[in-house]
Length: 207
Length: 207
DNA sequence: GTCTATAGGGCGATAGAC
DNA sequence: GTCTATCGCCCTATAGAC
Image (cartoon, rainbow over all chains, first blue to last red; front, side):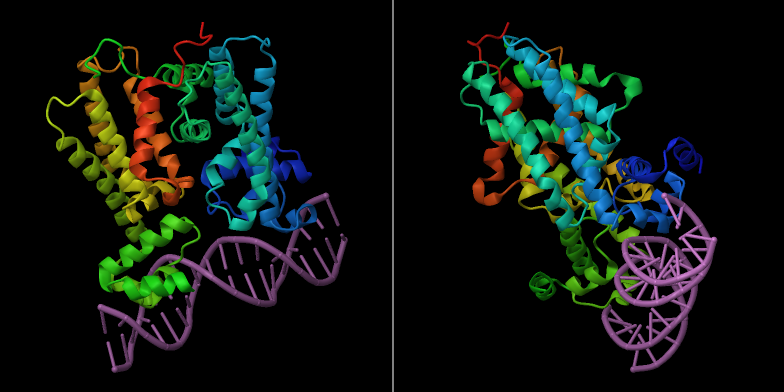
């Protein structure tokens, strides 16, 4: 296949090459559709050789899942940290959405793989990924909580529930996003406006 | 297993029993984790007998996927139709979210299965489901478009993109919704408020 | 560190009895 | 309409040569 050849040519061999090849395939085809033989071919080695680097298929998956969450967590944290301490709430919120969507849609084989396959892997693998997920969720909750303390977010907003809404909406973009129809940053800004302002007209029949 | 026994006892045999058992298993465990042998056991028959009713595993999946979209489409349409013609935009929007979430979270083995496995099935099965999906999407687009014409939705809202945001957020609730912590209708009303009004405080530092 | 070869098992699907 | 039995395939994982 043309795709596999390309991957094989570009991949470094060894541990990293296997992980990169696996993340790319898993993000595109899902957990059940990707076999060790496919991963090996994409990485430029034979299936049996994988077991020199990893004890099992699930070990590979576990490592990819963790790296995927960490990548988006790092990207969001760095973008928020780059803002001045008194940046407007709107800018903070935009930075979060830009970081999450750019990590997911533009630079993230591991993040894409995580979003795509997390719901498909065996329970034991899912559980192994939970600590890293919880850390990212707690980071977002703290950030949103600060905005609420600053009175930028309405007091009647249920923050943990809004965070679930937000992450669900952001991750779902993976299913339809097309980079040729606009950048991830533009999409993030559009989503940010919708979440911040709502869709309701101020002048309409909104009794 | 306790679960399989329960299903087997309750299921009618024959075509419907197979579909019901398969939808339940697929919604809980995903496409790759569910085999024909498991479906047969849950339906109270042997694996080979399935082929009297269906030509292939993918035929079963295809039928479940279509029924899942149709169920949520019907539920939303009925709830909107039950409103008076001049109902406020807020009520129309709430009816959409209530219908979608109740169909997905409370009454929908087929809808749950669709949301859960659509991204996991072979391309040919996914393609077969597209016409029914497109019909539901067009229905929602028309509905939102009417609200916009009535000047209830701001003119700068990109409706096709908002519809993607909305469905993505609603379907993602499947991953964490717990009926013991609140009803689907309450969740729908909460989401509706967030989408309609946004989260931004009117009094804060929102420059 | 990668190879070849294969064990052992589950899968979708089929054939034919009843 | 359901059964039993089985075919052929692909999978994960292992063993041992190089």
